[in-house]
Image (tube, rainbow, N blue to C red; front, side, top):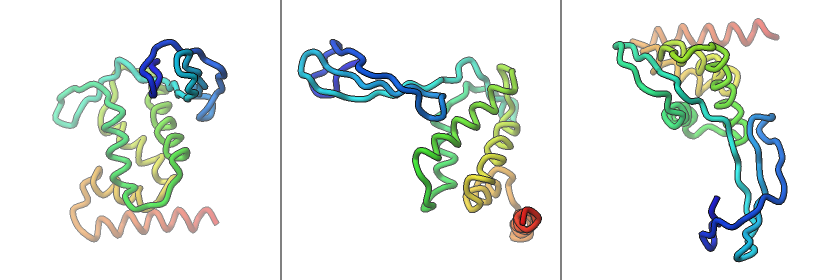
Length: 155
């Protein structure tokens, strides 16, 4: 790890703590050359996962692509970055629970929708409308009615 100030690789870890619900590690570092202190975060990375697209193409799992899609659905919505990171980690845990090196884009989309539903209902509707290809306002209304019914049933 290089120091962000002097670019030196000569630094030592001063403190390590679990972060993100135990799924990442936050390390405080001290640069031996310039005495600057900085923090780094180590997170688990999903490797060797293939996403099978609807047309049969296969591509490597790309966390950034997942994040971009969810961020787009959350555009202009209030949320805390910490909660957003928990959402992403939850989705990735769901992927890992599958216990397979291959996941279809449909399975992944359903995992995202399930998590988004409890995270932000507006983002959920936005994501679902694109993911499930809502054809018209009636389809949109059906999904809204289902969401409202579930909310009322919980009361």
